Image 1: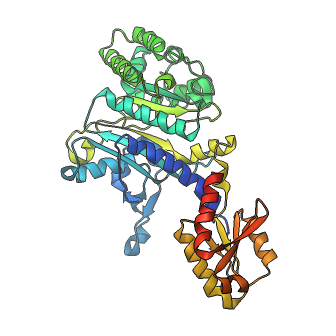
Image 2: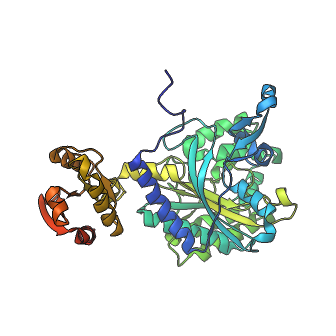
Image 3: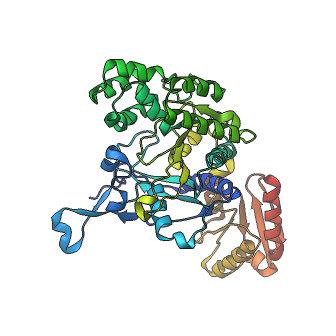
Length: 454
């Protein structure tokens, strides 16, 4: 007998799950559109060569490869892959359709991605990303606006305890240089450093030692990072400028580091006056493992979840890999699955989302009354109501019990007397009352009552 559960790391979504997902997506989409971002969709499958080499060595291992098909199947080789993220496909689209797109292109994309990762709490092999990106400008206003949009989305979803951590890849490079770490080891050390909020300073120290970094260099490197606690944001100054001044002193003799600090100062300044202003935290330990980042990097965190609810940064060189023409770009991605996990655990969803599949159930008394029941249902739907027609002739008590179990608030009864009189009897299950109306008036009456209930 075939297994009844989905593949590990994949999930089925029952009606209540889908309603919650659509609620969160709707909130995020509305915020993105308020900021002038346009929708984009790309295929689930990309050419393997499109994805390889864009995410670093560890990322390459997590790509879901698709074996060649047909006569080439026996080779065991792969030529396609499931989409790993939404950023690389965006870069490919911009390179391909550049003539059709505006010079300043702002897009949002909400679609699933796949990673051959080990499943854990809030981490799945198939999951949705809610991306927002701006292409065509190097202005720090881009990063500031992305942080503001993310702050708006988080606030409208009901989060009040999130922080947006920000850092700069060039500042990290300068700090690694200042610690005396060889440039050839920078990439692998950043991968280890990106785990600081998960494994702590001792875990990072052990990992960078395995990668060939000496103890003195490791100690000096970790001295730059005050935020080594298990909760991201712990140990960070509420005033990010204080932390920025401390780091500026550490890289004062490095031009690359000074320029990165100036860029961060500009971004922080531009977020003032937005909902992001009080949420911004400068965190020099933030690394973000993806290799295509070139400038500022960001993550959004809440206290009770190891890891982030989303992140992003500037990637000015990625589009050029496909087009040969450099196009500056910056983006932010919110992770839908992790947001859903935290919101569910905290009870943040409106009670109405756990509600009924319909507003009204039309009861069926006999097979001969089916046509009348369907006609009444059609009239009710014309008033904007969601209507469930009970398909079998059954005892009225059983049909009412079914409606109550499904949280359907009203039952419309169309019996012989109602058919003859052109009326419908409406039973309010919550109030345990019923009243008879002309069939043309039942829909508007129920719709008005639902509006009053909110």
